[in-house]
Length: 152
Image (cartoon, rainbow, N blue to C red; front, side, top):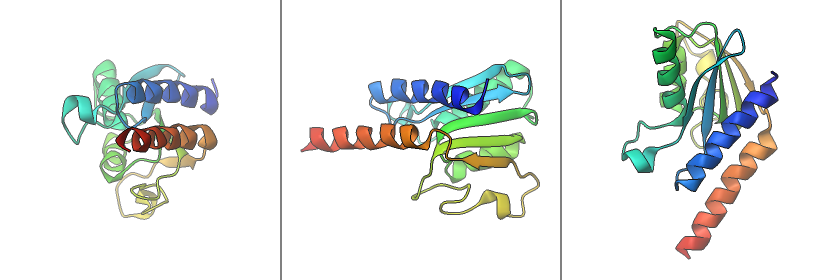
């Protein structure tokens, strides 16, 4: 499968999050053989925790499935550029590559607000942004438009 196909799965997960009243972010971890080993979506409101980001859920599921914390042969697909917490998890899990859709000018840490790739960490993933960017950004924009309309 190509990057766009995995990002479409992440978009499906993000849509599920939106249906639950969560900010629509979805993530998929794919092993080098093309197998999806982890999936996640935002669940901060449902879980009542700041830690329930899509990336963390997908990474945790991949670690459990593979039986270890080193995801050095994995690619993370996520609909929104990872925040500092999630970028840190990428570095700690040694994820080989990160592919994101929409840039995050408020908290993105792979080029927008800061760039973890340019910092003195012991691991630097390959980062490709802008995959299905219009679809990913549009999903977020529509969610927040509807939220503002409901709040009046």
